[in-house]
Image (cartoon, rainbow, N blue to C red):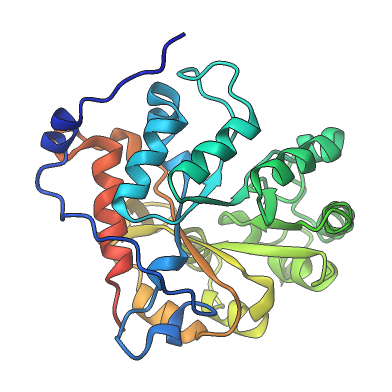
Length: 318
């Protein structure tokens, strides 16, 4: 099956109104926050990536090659995978995907896989991660599947996560968990215990790492108040190598308190967050927007959202 083509002129017309992409900078500082204090930037451009779930419709319809070309043109440095297949490139292998990354000057930073994949195919998952050169691999599933939001349930989840982390560490890879809002709820059997605190306390900091989805952490703060998302990072700096930089519009009328929007178009105070966590640790900011595929074509579709969000993230100043 021949590879799909994208008409460059049509694409550029489609994203008319977006800011021109900035060339990728060579900054390779130790982290976010104060690392760029000299020029006021809070997120080094060399530490910006994208979760491919954000543009899953384009990966599916255009394939990795076209998507990687456009992401590199926009200035992204890293990609986080949400799967390793595309109907537009049937039969593509992890080795071929790695070559496409290399061809476009991109690097894989991590991959989201289901808990059941780690339970039944751990070594195969690690084989793929090695082929792609991923330093991190993990899950965005709630720790207990199906959900068991009790103290015992989260203790069992922490034990399982430690096992996943040990298997990954044996291959030189770091295993991580990505939060949603429910991890910040209180245990069903003890309303004084926050579930996320169990996960932090009971997982081995040398084996289990954390990817904070900033948007979902703020939703967690809305539904179960009493914490500041940045405080978790400041107290456990080396455990948070990856962040999902996902923005939200304040919507007190909604149960979650926020609605997902393009980065820079919402009300989450990323300036304060990135400034507060400082420069310690090898932090990477990965843009994610769950509803980007529904971006209107007159605004460039998901590619338009990707370009505007990169510009907003890469020019964020404190």
